[in-house]
Image (cartoon, rainbow, N blue to C red; front, side, top):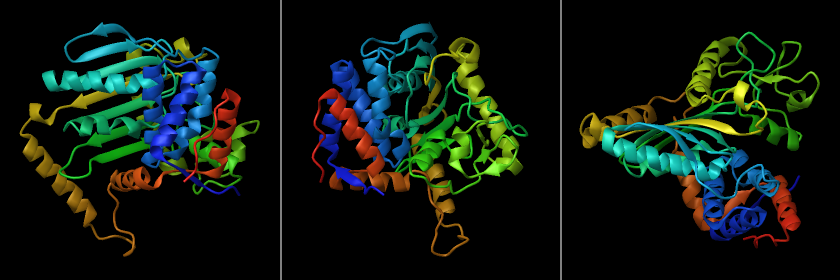
Length: 353
């Protein structure tokens, strides 16, 4: 098995930006894309970080993703807007959409942006701190109209994409950051296990025979298995309902579902909502109530004495702080793919730490 490597954050940022620029992104797009990709790794979402660089390079080089331009505003009111990204990279469009929703929230109390036709956005966690740093609450949902990976509860064939949901909440300390799939696991986790020739740690799949499985090879076989909705074989009706909600908020509101975007590869639809706590009450009281809730979770009696309750975002913050000093950790399989990606572009890989 190939060993993990560490690369300086600044050197990795420069190298990723150079790769994206060489592939066809203009300077601004390449810089924002590189920041968004590496943010996923910093926070521990390694399947949705620089691992996705070769995909983004390919999309730019083939012209399937645009390397320059701005989203079109299709509709707008005081606190809502509908954007068409016109195949711009989601890594570039998402920070712009969050910023626009933040501006609406600061003026109107809330702001919602729905975006269609943007290339894959990668890790949603990468966009949360943009809002929480300004004292704002943020919700994000994303779906992929051309992708069917998740079975509805009670079925064994694929219907939904493995839709992620993210929540960011400011506190008096580290912000609460939640980024999770509405299926038992994300498709990226299945691909990672497949690449490493490992079994999944959970029964996350349902085979063509209707049997639960943790074998990632079944996901790529014929007939292929499907991801189970959150809750699995027994309680998957809960995840099924959340998948319906997600695709209505993202695809239906964006008028960009499988009928319209079924041939658009990994293009995403997104729902971004930002809320200003000041519009509802006092910010200080919001923080006080939120801190109290988190502390009650933290001090709840754990099932295992040596495994205290975790607060979403705390470990990610620690990992980010550590990697900014000691270097970004990249698994050996991904590093090999990154080196090959750079070689195809004629770019030497960054020096390892």
